[in-house]
Length: 360
Image (cartoon, rainbow, N blue to C red; front, side):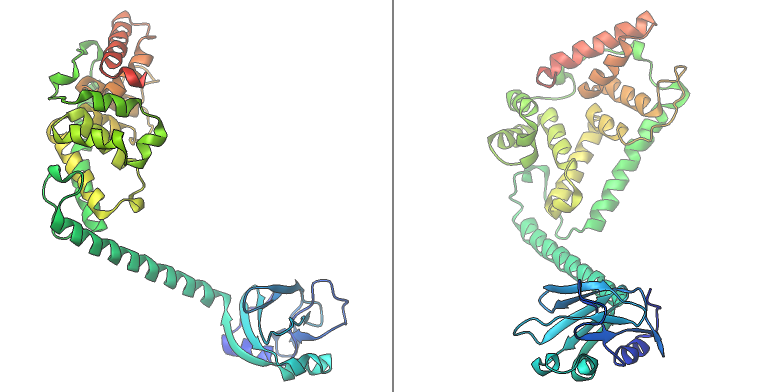
């Protein structure tokens, strides 16, 4: 393969002779260029492509022992690109070069630009970073306008700060996340919660649930409907949340948090934090259940080896009133040989079904 040499050396060597070998051309036919690995040492076995600057590939192959790579002309074209594993040459080939002898071809063509493939990759990375930064600046500018208006669908959560960035989002999210994680960790000490103490409570025990029909409709809607965050079902859910329905606010949090952060506007990111802080303040079990899913799957500290730490955290959320976790933990507990635990599991399943029949 081509030995990596300083760009200046490669440029000098590339001018010493012709470079490419046509895809199916005979070993000694047509115009060619010659690659050198070192002065006087032809580059053998180096893959290459020969294309127009517009990207149309005309030939490809592997240089032979003499370093030759055969090339083809494209009618009406003077500008070509030769690429090898590590280098890229941009060449200008006047029409008369193709009329001359093959061994005079390299002296006839003109080298316009030489770059290493490494430089190309770095340029591409730099461009990507610039585009990313430009996109972020556009998002920041859009947020500034939205913050001043403060009239989005979730404006009832409170005023938006005048400036907000992805870094601000990460810091605020981690701050509240750490509080939730610590609370879960404290609850799992000494074996975690006792499922036998489970008490079923209706949704209104945890707070008001006005317009609950809108929440039920949202929960029962197809996944495709719940992904778009627009339409009558979403608008009704937002309206229920505005009226203080804690289940609606939990579903809003679930929906926004499930979206890749890069697809969220800065405004939506801030609304996620507001929802999360509200749910934590109210000690809504569904928030803890959401976090329990992210806990590493490691052995827990309960007698049964099947109860991992993640399972214990889910049970804690179920005891706090997470109907989702009551359903998942109830399925497991109802089959437990301990009759008291099995009964607790059946209670959890019945409680979850009564509260959210659409999800069963």
